[in-house]
Length: 171
Ligand code: MG
Image (cartoon, rainbow, N blue to C red; front, side, top):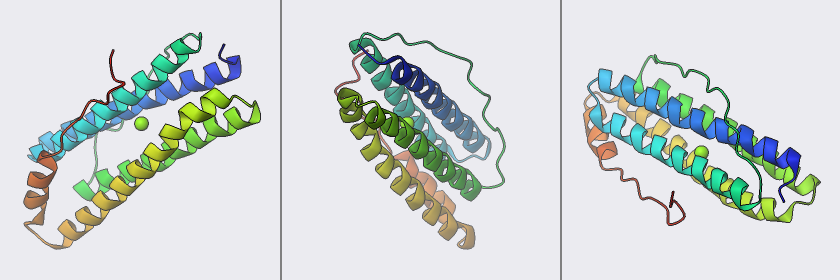
Protein backbone atom coordinates (compact mmCIF):
# COMPACT_ATOMS: atom_id res chain seq x y z
CA UNK A 1 0.00 0.00 0.00
CA UNK A 2 1.30 3.40 -0.97
CA UNK A 3 2.10 5.76 1.89
CA UNK A 4 -0.39 8.67 1.94
CA UNK A 5 2.30 11.33 1.92
CA UNK A 6 3.93 9.66 -1.09
CA UNK A 7 0.55 9.33 -2.83
CA UNK A 8 -0.10 13.07 -2.37
CA UNK A 9 3.41 13.95 -3.57
CA UNK A 10 3.09 11.77 -6.69
CA UNK A 11 -0.32 13.26 -7.43
CA UNK A 12 1.41 16.66 -7.29
CA UNK A 13 4.02 15.34 -9.71
CA UNK A 14 1.32 14.07 -12.08
CA UNK A 15 0.00 17.64 -12.17
CA UNK A 16 3.54 18.90 -12.89
CA UNK A 17 4.01 16.39 -15.74
CA UNK A 18 0.72 17.42 -17.35
CA UNK A 19 1.76 21.06 -16.95
CA UNK A 20 5.05 20.21 -18.69
CA UNK A 21 3.13 18.71 -21.63
CA UNK A 22 0.91 21.81 -21.69
CA UNK A 23 3.93 24.15 -21.61
CA UNK A 24 5.62 22.32 -24.50
CA UNK A 25 2.38 22.36 -26.50
CA UNK A 26 2.25 26.13 -25.95
CA UNK A 27 5.84 26.41 -27.20
CA UNK A 28 4.85 24.30 -30.24
CA UNK A 29 2.11 26.80 -31.10
CA UNK A 30 4.61 29.68 -30.81
CA UNK A 31 6.98 27.95 -33.24
CA UNK A 32 4.09 27.33 -35.65
CA UNK A 33 3.37 31.06 -35.55
CA UNK A 34 7.05 31.74 -36.34
CA UNK A 35 6.93 29.45 -39.40
CA UNK A 36 9.34 27.02 -37.78
CA UNK A 37 7.42 23.73 -38.16
CA UNK A 38 10.42 21.51 -37.29
CA UNK A 39 10.81 23.17 -33.90
CA UNK A 40 7.08 22.98 -33.35
CA UNK A 41 7.25 19.26 -34.12
CA UNK A 42 10.14 18.83 -31.64
CA UNK A 43 8.01 20.48 -28.95
CA UNK A 44 5.03 18.23 -29.70
CA UNK A 45 7.27 15.17 -29.35
CA UNK A 46 8.50 16.65 -26.07
CA UNK A 47 4.87 17.06 -24.97
CA UNK A 48 4.15 13.41 -25.81
CA UNK A 49 7.11 12.37 -23.66
CA UNK A 50 5.66 14.35 -20.78
CA UNK A 51 2.33 12.57 -21.22
CA UNK A 52 4.19 9.27 -21.10
CA UNK A 53 5.77 10.37 -17.79
CA UNK A 54 2.29 11.21 -16.52
CA UNK A 55 1.07 7.68 -17.29
CA UNK A 56 4.16 6.10 -15.74
CA UNK A 57 3.29 7.79 -12.44
CA UNK A 58 -0.41 6.99 -12.93
CA UNK A 59 0.29 3.28 -13.37
CA UNK A 60 2.61 3.23 -10.38
CA UNK A 61 0.03 4.80 -8.04
CA UNK A 62 -2.54 2.20 -9.16
CA UNK A 63 -0.09 -0.67 -8.82
CA UNK A 64 0.63 0.33 -5.23
CA UNK A 65 -3.07 0.48 -4.34
CA UNK A 66 -3.23 4.29 -4.29
CA UNK A 67 -5.62 6.67 -5.98
CA UNK A 68 -4.77 9.20 -8.65
CA UNK A 69 -6.55 12.52 -8.10
CA UNK A 70 -6.30 15.31 -10.65
CA UNK A 71 -6.22 19.04 -9.93
CA UNK A 72 -6.32 22.22 -12.01
CA UNK A 73 -3.49 22.81 -14.46
CA UNK A 74 -1.96 26.31 -14.58
CA UNK A 75 -2.02 28.14 -17.90
CA UNK A 76 1.40 28.15 -19.63
CA UNK A 77 3.12 31.27 -21.04
CA UNK A 78 2.20 31.91 -24.67
CA UNK A 79 4.85 34.37 -25.86
CA UNK A 80 8.64 34.26 -26.06
CA UNK A 81 11.13 36.71 -27.58
CA UNK A 82 13.13 34.28 -29.71
CA UNK A 83 13.81 30.56 -30.33
CA UNK A 84 16.75 30.93 -27.92
CA UNK A 85 14.42 32.32 -25.24
CA UNK A 86 12.10 29.32 -25.71
CA UNK A 87 14.88 26.79 -25.21
CA UNK A 88 16.27 28.75 -22.26
CA UNK A 89 12.77 28.43 -20.77
CA UNK A 90 12.88 24.66 -21.47
CA UNK A 91 16.22 24.39 -19.66
CA UNK A 92 14.91 26.38 -16.68
CA UNK A 93 11.74 24.27 -16.57
CA UNK A 94 13.63 20.98 -16.67
CA UNK A 95 15.93 22.18 -13.87
CA UNK A 96 12.79 22.86 -11.83
CA UNK A 97 11.38 19.40 -12.62
CA UNK A 98 14.68 17.83 -11.53
CA UNK A 99 14.21 19.59 -8.18
CA UNK A 100 10.70 18.15 -7.89
CA UNK A 101 11.87 14.61 -8.70
CA UNK A 102 14.72 14.96 -6.20
CA UNK A 103 12.14 16.06 -3.63
CA UNK A 104 10.11 12.88 -4.27
CA UNK A 105 13.24 10.77 -3.87
CA UNK A 106 14.09 12.59 -0.62
CA UNK A 107 10.62 11.70 0.69
CA UNK A 108 10.94 8.05 -0.39
CA UNK A 109 14.27 7.78 1.43
CA UNK A 110 12.95 9.59 4.50
CA UNK A 111 9.99 7.23 4.92
CA UNK A 112 12.02 4.19 3.79
CA UNK A 113 9.68 3.52 0.88
CA UNK A 114 12.08 1.31 -1.08
CA UNK A 115 9.62 0.51 -3.88
CA UNK A 116 9.11 4.23 -4.57
CA UNK A 117 12.81 5.00 -4.44
CA UNK A 118 13.46 2.19 -6.96
CA UNK A 119 10.64 3.49 -9.19
CA UNK A 120 11.86 7.09 -8.93
CA UNK A 121 15.40 6.19 -9.98
CA UNK A 122 14.16 6.02 -13.60
CA UNK A 123 13.03 9.65 -13.35
CA UNK A 124 16.31 10.73 -11.73
CA UNK A 125 18.14 9.27 -14.77
CA UNK A 126 15.58 10.71 -17.19
CA UNK A 127 16.17 14.22 -15.81
CA UNK A 128 19.91 13.92 -16.52
CA UNK A 129 18.95 13.33 -20.19
CA UNK A 130 16.33 16.09 -20.20
CA UNK A 131 18.77 18.66 -18.83
CA UNK A 132 21.53 17.58 -21.23
CA UNK A 133 19.16 17.77 -24.20
CA UNK A 134 17.91 21.23 -23.16
CA UNK A 135 21.51 22.48 -22.73
CA UNK A 136 22.38 21.09 -26.17
CA UNK A 137 19.44 22.93 -27.73
CA UNK A 138 20.33 26.20 -25.95
CA UNK A 139 23.86 25.91 -27.37
CA UNK A 140 22.52 25.38 -30.88
CA UNK A 141 20.11 28.31 -30.62
CA UNK A 142 22.91 30.60 -29.38
CA UNK A 143 24.92 29.60 -32.42
CA UNK A 144 21.93 30.30 -34.67
CA UNK A 145 21.36 33.71 -33.03
CA UNK A 146 24.73 34.91 -34.37
CA UNK A 147 24.71 32.96 -37.66
CA UNK A 148 21.79 33.99 -39.86
CA UNK A 149 20.42 31.12 -41.91
CA UNK A 150 21.37 28.48 -39.36
CA UNK A 151 17.89 28.63 -37.84
CA UNK A 152 16.30 27.01 -40.91
CA UNK A 153 18.92 24.26 -40.89
CA UNK A 154 18.15 23.64 -37.21
CA UNK A 155 14.44 23.66 -37.97
CA UNK A 156 15.03 20.81 -40.45
CA UNK A 157 17.15 18.95 -37.90
CA UNK A 158 14.49 19.18 -35.18
CA UNK A 159 11.80 18.03 -37.62
CA UNK A 160 13.43 14.57 -37.58
CA UNK A 161 12.75 13.89 -33.88
CA UNK A 162 10.66 10.76 -33.39
CA UNK A 163 8.52 9.83 -30.40
CA UNK A 164 9.24 6.21 -29.52
CA UNK A 165 6.50 5.00 -27.16
CA UNK A 166 8.23 3.20 -24.28
CA UNK A 167 7.30 -0.46 -23.77
CA UNK A 168 5.58 0.34 -20.48
CA UNK A 169 3.35 2.90 -22.17
CA UNK A 170 0.46 0.52 -22.57
CA UNK A 171 -2.57 2.54 -21.59
MG1 MG B 1 8.74 14.84 -17.38
